[in-house]
Every structure is written in C-alpha cells, then in structure tokens.
Image (cartoon, rainbow, N blue to C red):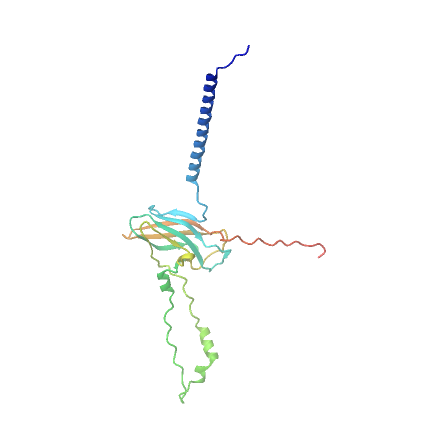
Length: 243
C-alpha cells in the first residue's frame, strides 16, 4: 500500500531545505570576506626598499634604497633614494646622514649648490716683459704655460655637502631622489665594491626639531633597488664540432 505525503508537508520540507542552503551560503561568504580583510591588513606593498621609524616614533622613513647600478666601484658616487614623513606637531629638519661605506652628502639642494660653487679665480701673474717693453719669450711660450698648468692641477669639484638642513613640514613629507634633483649620496664609496643586489651598511639619519631636540633613524642595511627595465638576457654560444 502506497502512502501519499500531503502537499502541505512537502512544501514545508522544501522551504526548510532552501532556508538551510541560504544560511550555509551566507556563512561561507562571510568567512571568505573576513579572511581576505585579515590578509590585506598584513600584506606588505611590493615596493623595494627599507622602512623604519625614528626612535621617538614621529618621523617615518619609507622606501629607502640605493639607486641601481650593476657595479659601484670604490671611490664611486652612490646615489640614495628616500622619502621622509613628519608626524610630529612641529617642523623638523634632516641635519645629517652617516654611513659605514663613506661620507653621505646632500646633492642639488641650495646648500649643496653653494658648496659646489667654485671659488673666484685668482689673478694670473703678470707676464714678464723685456727691456724693449714686449713680452718675453718665456712668458709667451705655450710649452712653458702647459708645463706650469700640469704642475698645479685644479681640485675636483665637490659632489655635495655633508652640512644639510632639509626641512620637513608638519604633516608633510620630502622625497629625496635623482628624479627630484635633490638627493643624498655617498660621496666616495669605501671598502668593497657594491654589486647589484647588495646594500649599504649602517646608515643613520639625524633629525632636529624646531625646539632644538633631536631624534634618529638607524638602518642596518639600505638595499639596492631593482632596474627600471629588465636586463638583457645573455647570448648563449653554441659550439660546433670540427671547428
């Protein structure tokens, strides 16, 4: 004997099943959303460089890098890239940078330009004249002038100055890099060559507030950035038998 389930009971069972499926779907969606928010909150931006805060937590250094080069040899100028943010309630100035790899200078700023301005040329000595009043042969000889110039070479122009006062306004930031024409640089790299993928060691930044107090940011390493365009692939050389 076949029993027939009343239509009302069938509708009630179908409704309960649909409600259960909807509740399960909402639960799964809310779980995925919460996980994504948590992952986003802990992700680090894919920008090369080092980030650090000052000892008092009010100055932030972001994206600190060494400008890319395949090989910085000892004695080379090594440009740096950095952004500095002022979260204090008073203005602050970057007043010094040091590194274990050489003297760090400011290039392109007003103080750097003044330091790099060559001194006024000293007056040239009076050309000796003969008794007749005409210039003597020794004074007009090109060979002797060339020899004198070779004995007293002019000093190389300064890259920048270690005396700096880069102001960072309250709630603002300063970007120092070659693209802004004002940047920091190691004047003469000392020690070992700095190769691609390497880093400068022990870089310290000193900041002076408007009230005269100071704070610092110390980096164990400042890494070299990646090239802006992919490097060319090396050409493979295939040998031929019998050659």
